Amino acid sequence: MLRTTDSFAGQRPGGRVPHLSLHLPPEWTRDALCAQTDPEAFFPDKGGSTRPAKSVCRDCPVLAECRDYALARGDLHGVWGGLSERERRRVRRQARRSGTPVTELVAQQRRAA
Image (cartoon, rainbow, N blue to C red):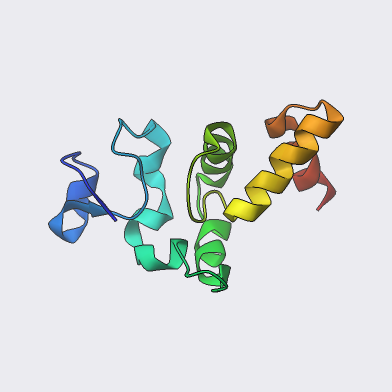
């Protein structure tokens, strides 16, 4: 869990934000449901379930923005945008192989679902 002095973080006791970047988080993070949730869910132990985090993500109004951010960054740990680290690696690998931009590949998968 990260500590920040951002006014957004002040909405949580002790100014804690579960897994948002300390380096000027994007504007959409203000609406992220993870900021109102137990951060432990987003960082399960190896072999642990990602279901609790993904259930939060499923209802999040900024799911697409978070997913795109995580896929673009590539260096984030835990669940972001409803995807685990393994799932994000798989999407990036598929995008490289197909020559399709990652965000377009994700959009195609969403439409197909």
